[in-house]
Length: 71
Image (tube, rainbow, N blue to C red; front, top):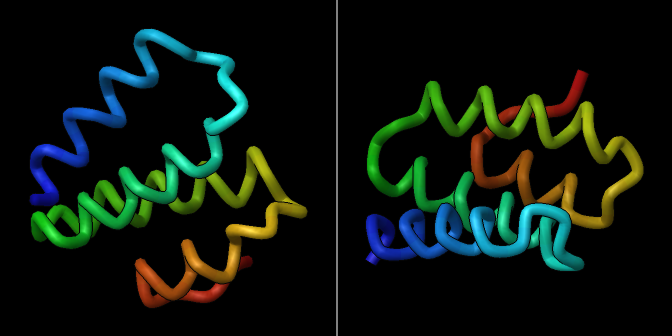
């Protein structure tokens, strides 16, 4: 359920804004946004993710989710 997943990432972000699973939370949120048809929001969040975490092991997954390549 992508709507529930997105809500859970928002709740997690409120409870643990600097938690150790920040990157994973962002990947889940990006995936949920795409599944909800909110592609523009997903692309914007993916762009912010690539900027914030340029060396992330999750970058290829984020790019696959939004269907784009990095800069």
